[in-house]
Image (cartoon, rainbow, N blue to C red; front, side, top):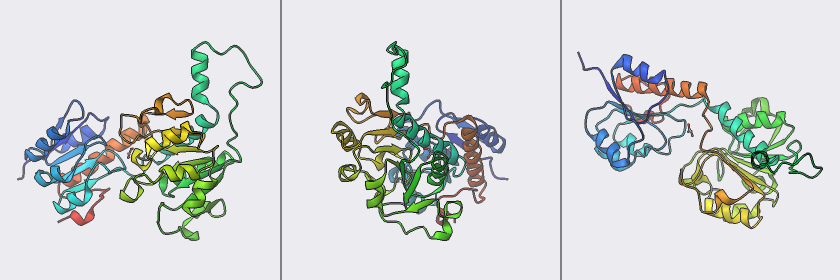
Length: 331
Ligand code: GLV
């Protein structure tokens, strides 16, 4: 009989994942995110079969080269914190949690559109600071959302869920299939969106959007997708919304563009070097800044916990995990 698996959870996660894993084997939960060297040593120790990681854990080629683990189960849909090619080379399976956080993340994209359009955070501060002295005809005038153009960079699950919401708000929705150069989305792939959204080239999307919302994964070709020249091509009244990954935007260039009035505002849930912000970003009044909470609802985090545990258990028990990023690593 083989030994029961041993799981390492690098940061406390909600139930039911820890209990599911405890029913399959032994579980060690670290009190908080380990530094890279600690994680490297834990993965190399031979003590653990599968590691349940989160976005702050950098699972790079160096760590994987020495790792004695069967797999990494990421508590996230995105897996840019993991060098998947290196994992595959070393036969380490990688799992993720797609699907369950689509609506929650689209809600945050829409919340950022609404909050920037209607100056929600500025208004909240004004009331709390005692600067609200009564209704005024020109107090905190914002912009209409209905009739405005929402441009979606990418048209995957979360972009589509954002489109659904934006259409409900009377927005005109355009999208560019995963810029900079993905294949066009065929008409018969548009499903419920046929005739309701329009596909345009990336150049046109950046120039026409009143709200440009980013929905591309972070890969080499999308790093700094929104850089100085893109920001210059956007309308001066445009707002940039980012709920994907910070490095998709050149954050320093964004601060300069906001300062110079090249674009009107930004609603951000993610940052280039989390949790640090580019100098000056926090001082700009025309930004709404959230602490990477796209998937942060009670039920979504529960589902992420369940899926990441099911992936981890399957990997430990030599079965195919329900959400496997690198099937080519299966031996
Ligand atoms: C969150 O950012 C995720 O990728 O799940």
